[in-house]
Image 1: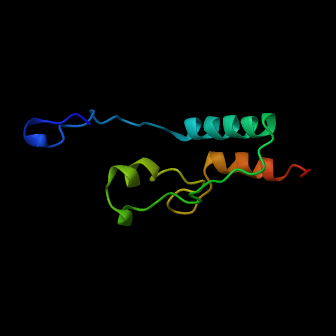
Image 2: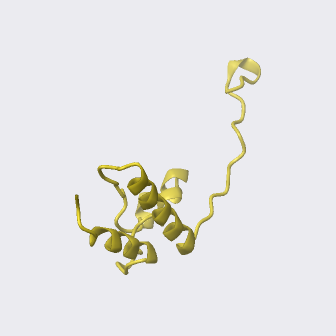
Length: 93
């Protein structure tokens, strides 16, 4: 980080806007499972089963992962959930 006058850190890089939607989440999981098959992943972890609620605050980190779940905030399965279901139904070797 570049130092400003007086030895204090200068401003960081500009904030980036991260956008997504249901189609992008589905595409991500399809690509992830495809890579898992190609490279023989032993396991894949999804950290957020359900979308986070606003009680976790409004930090950039909380906002970035707010809609990352396989279920929405009301507990309804999102489109990406069915990618997981399809993959879990395959025989394990």
